[in-house]
Length: 244
Image 1: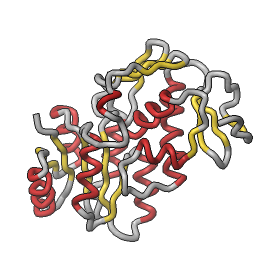
Image 2 (image 1 turned 90 degrees about the vertical axis):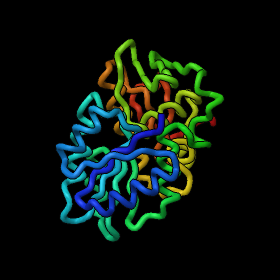
Image 3 (image 1 turned 180 degrees about the vertical axis):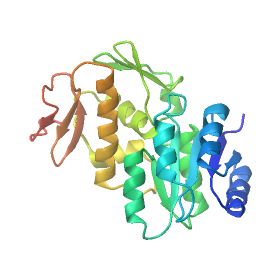
Image 4 (image 1 turned 60 degrees about the horizontal axis):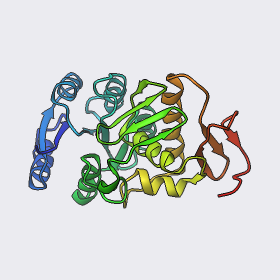
């Protein structure tokens, strides 16, 4: 089955362009012209990712992101926003709303395709296919890589694509302090610029999701360095990275 991508845009011609690019690379696409259409398609079609055209004057991509992340049926979908140059305030709003990646229009097709292949499970350097069947567990957290499911103490946890990959890397290296460059290399596609603030926001989302399942905060923050998954951390914050 070809991976399906939902494209939300008020510009039919732009959808046609993206559809042509995606089809040539082995993806199928479906068009949603309103927030309601995008939400319906995402819930009913089970896509691999949702692309939101966030031009000024188009429908609210941030509103769409919040609705998708708040629905258990679509909460773990990869959300990609295409923003206009100079729209820094829009980027911050989208990040807070739950978007997984932002690209500035006009975007080079190769960058978008690299990200989509990662979402569809074909990316290299993020989750090697040879390791997909290796069970991951630590301190009550269980990760099913094949089923893309996470539980903590038996409670299902809904994670976005980026949070899932961050947790996957932390589970592979429990109690090891992972610096932000290491996390970026393992949770984002290559050639995508990721700022420190972006890593902090996604770790915050991961921490919140784990706490919703009950128990103590397992993510230890090491200021100016990075993060560690550590069941012995009582505060979740430290200033000394300790032994690496």
